[in-house]
Length: 360
Ligand code: F6P
Image (cartoon, rainbow, N blue to C red):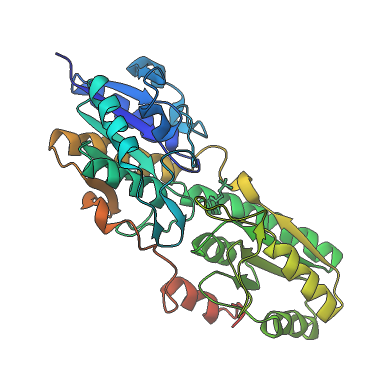
């Protein structure tokens, strides 16, 4: 009987999901295995018609296609996280139904491609008896145990390009431009794109900021004859003593939707410095589109690595980028402890050495 494996994509999408799917399908096919795509995230395990056999020959073009051909979801009966470090136990009846679904599909293993939330669900599925392999995805780059997640490089490349564009218009109009990027608990995108894009101020969730400090950079630049300033703010950045700026209400199960801190920062800088100030929210543009060369390669290595782990029966493991190798770590070593930007890391030291303000 042909060996059959399953794959699903969970949580927010990001560039490179399709490249992982392609690599899994192709390397499984090379072993003579069949791959079944579970559609719509974990919920697809509960509706067995929600699957699709992924043929080797259908994989053409997926390497660079944005989004996920399997669809995804971060809500429903599997929602496993309500906030930073808060893990919700999924209803055992739902897990049992998922296991029954997995078995009736005749699968040997399930590849789960997702971020901290999806990997947390994957671990619970594993504990409920489903042989699972994880692949770490997220533009936020906040998963422990891997040097980088896929999607991050593509998001940084997009954000850097956007900052280049904001800089020229800021300079032309002698304005302060505030670019809001994604980054809920971790400011990796803001820090990397901010430095690569020549920002003057970078505000990240890990460093509570004060407006005195932010505005000092603007006024000092004015005094030096530099009449424009480029500010990058992660959506999860906070003024010291204040909470996240959110859009809409926080659900009991889902994490609050962040957004709006850029407008708050721009308005306060305008009031305090008298400078004309504008904000640009990059939002989901950072999650769409084609993966960069780096991400295509990383996704391909992750996909091939996941199939290798199935062959070795290393279930409950996740592929991890540990140059020069694609390694395997227990999913439990990766979840529940987000990898944030350490205050003394080289990327921040580099920014500070160049005189970039971090709002502290
Ligand atoms: O986790 C990735 C991420 O893009 C965060 O940076 C952001 O806060 C969140 O997803 C947005 O999710 P949604 O698209 O569900 O609003």
